Length: 148
Image 1 (cartoon, rainbow, N blue to C red):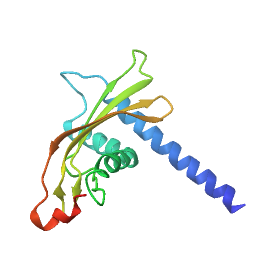
Image 2 (image 1 turned 90 degrees about the vertical axis):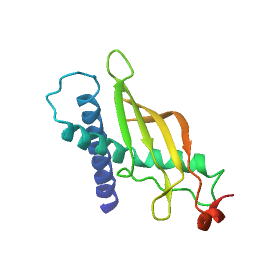
Image 3 (image 1 turned 180 degrees about the vertical axis):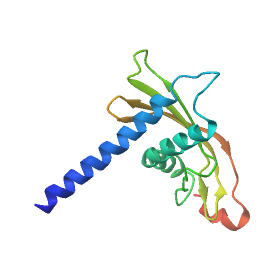
């Protein structure tokens, strides 16, 4: 019986995250010159979007850097992350979310800057469209053993 309750809690939690994610995208999908929403609110929604996409972002960062580093770098939504959203379809059922991240090792030693583009569907499914390594940051001498 408890297994069924746990499955229901997991389902509701995932559904709530998808709802919050979709609401944030809907709020900021159309570029405007005048906004009724203060910049602080937009920053909060972008932070929420970055956190909701964290599993997908971390998977993509790991996939890219596993060829370069012994251990994959970490991604933190609060460390140099930028989020932009726009409608990817005319009927606004799909949204394009571009995230610029600064993966790091150790005590926030950046290994580069990466741009990841996702498509988010109406039901909250996330698909990676592209991964672009924008900038390379060399590790300091005491971390050189992290390179493959």
